[in-house]
Length: 209
Image (cartoon, rainbow, N blue to C red):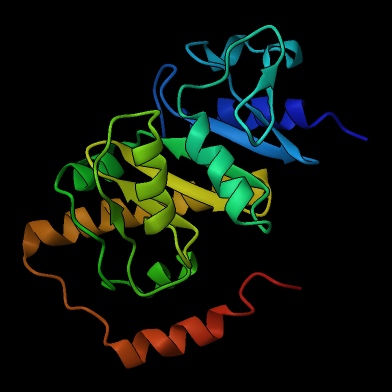
């Protein structure tokens, strides 16, 4: 069986080429049985080896030679609250950060908003990074959703596995950019509740074989 730490490192290394991150900002985790692996704090992703990846329990304890990301709490709480989640990704991508600093939800300006489970992408209330308050705000914004913005901070997505989490993060940053650009020209025309409900119905089987 492949070592999940190898794919975790590969996913973390993909953030910068995908335009999602620079330096050591952001973090990625993957569920492993009752626990989860998470990127360590303050280390260059390109320098990571498997032994650098801490294994965390849902109670916040960890094993390994490195300290886990300071943002471990919302990863842990998402895994505890949502058994369908297999991977969590947080990034400081430029367009998501821009909108998060305005503390605004992303409305249904494009039907692909439904990819995240609803007719908006919510912006979670602000709380300092790494805190229980931020985790609670993030979980509230993620209710029924696979992605949200974190006020004055960045984006957060939850997928069934690392591949989906990375794809969701790329999609969310793209939607943030599209919304940001559309707002430069005026007020985007929004899809109606009925139109979004029809999209959500079609998306119930989206991406399934």
